[in-house]
Amino acid sequence: MAAKMSSASPLALYNLVSAGLWGFLLYQVVTVYPKIGQPAFFYETRNYLNAIQCGALVEILNSLLGIVRTPLLTTAAQVASRLLLTVGIFHYLPEAYNAQNATFLALLTAWSVTEIVRYLFYYCNLTLKNGPPKLLVMLRYNLFWVLYPMGVASELLIIYSALSVAEAKYSPHVRLGLVAGMLLYIPGFPMLYMHMVVQRKKVMKSLRADTKKQA
Image (cartoon, rainbow, N blue to C red):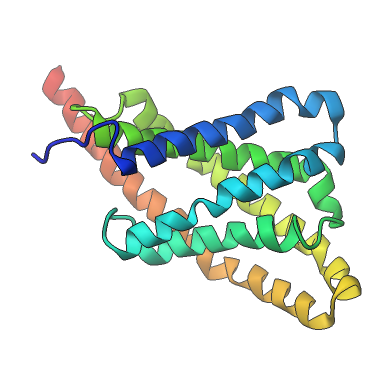
């Protein structure tokens, strides 16, 4: 069995820091939103969200170089779809009405919880001798049933609400670009979702086998 990385290794630290940054965003949802509501919360957090999400570009490079085993196409699709929101809409089309209501809150919650669990899972997998705790494994391979559809639905609703703003503010071509982006979800979401379903099946089978051995 390959030795685990030191907790101070660059990849391990990247995952730990990333989990902390997404934890900061979830903390904003819990503590800041109730105080200021929307749309103030959107304007308060969009720059934080954009900066943190742009950091995920590192994951495409890691996949391309073979540093991690995550499929390149899956990683690139997920990062690109999120940057369409955080850069394309939250920065250039902030007037989109679904960015300024509960849809944004649902989006931020789904993304934050998903990423906290994912990055902590990766960190533990890299640094702990026996791998991630069973609870973390269960969360990693079960929360996606709800959080992935919740996140994708929020993303599409926000993009849809930006279509008329894009045409009025820029041009019909920008609107068409957003429509094209939405159409990419048709092959993209099933690909990402089924990837997790397949991975879950393998992991749950392994967990059951381990449980039988310990019984």
